[in-house]
Amino acid sequence: MYFIRDNFQVFSATSADGLTWIEDSSFRISTETAPSLDASSVTSCAVLPLADGSYRMLYTAKSSSASYHILSAASTDGLNWIKDPGVRYETGTSSVTLDSLRVTALSSGRWRLYYLERSSSTGVLDIFDLKTATAPNNALAWTAHRVIASSLTAGGIDVSTMTDGSIRLFY
Figure 1: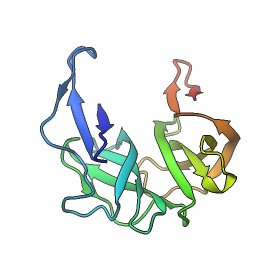
Figure 2: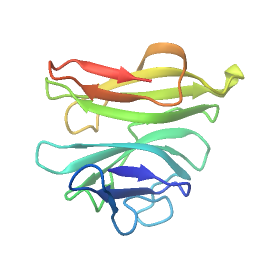
Figure 3: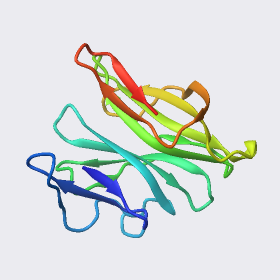
C-alpha cells in the first residue's frame, strides 16, 4: 500500500493478511530529497506493475510555479523510486488542481488513467471534472486527456476491474 502524509511524501506499508499493516521504513518519494521531483507537494499517486516485472508510479504534484502536473517514477522493487524524465500531463495554470489519481490495466494491455480536475475559476471548490487518458503499459506516452463526466461533486474516486473484465468507477 502507498499513502501520502501531510508533509506530501509518499510512504508504503506491507501486510500479509490485508488487515494488519506494517509501515516500511522511510518514504518512497519526496519533494525534498534527491533526485528532485521538481514539485512542491505530491497530492496523489497510483502504482501498476510493468510487463518486465518492475513498477511505475504516476503521481500528481504541484510545481514551484503553482501549476499541477502528473509525473512518473520507476522502481524495480516497489521501494526505491527514480523519477522519470519529463511530464506526463500539465495543467499549465495555477487555477486548476489535480487529485485522486487512479490507474487500471485494461484487457488490451493498455493502461487507463482517471483523475479529478478542479478549476478554481468556478468559485466552487468541490466541483470537479472526471478526466481520463490511456497509454501503453509503460505509462510514459498518454493519449489526449478528455472529460468523461463534468461538474461532479466528489471527494475522491476509485476504480476496480470486475470479474467480467468491465471497469467500475466509484466517486
